[in-house]
Image 1 (cartoon, rainbow, N blue to C red):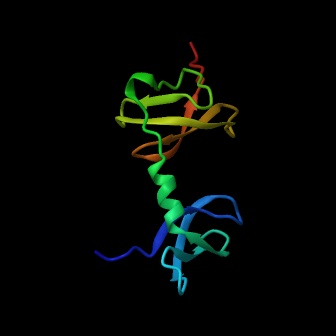
Image 2: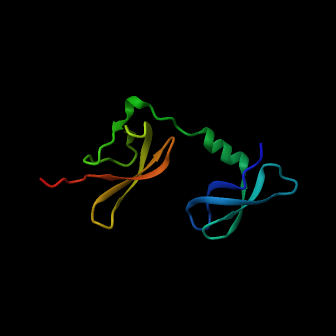
Image 3: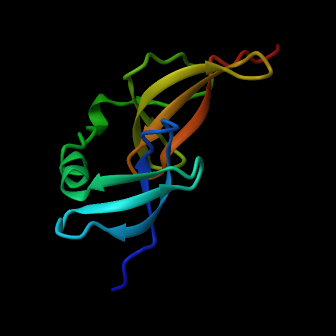
Length: 125
């Protein structure tokens, strides 16, 4: 099995979670690797053993705790959501206003990763 040339990491320079290009290993340190951000092109060294610990600490969401997603509902940050169409659970990470003046939430799903969903949708009668 070949190693991938890219990894999704949090860039320390631009602050975004982005695809990072692996540019080389650190000589003498088996767990450290040099990465280059594909967004801002800054290089940084990441300790892969720390990244593995973060992945191991991921909290699994219990389906019983989840609220079924509907665009008409309003959600709090940290709320657990179940998306019926995707059969996926996630947590609300942030809220924002859309360019059209509506409301949106960013949800980190277990299978589908981060997604932006509409909330508090007012349907015209």
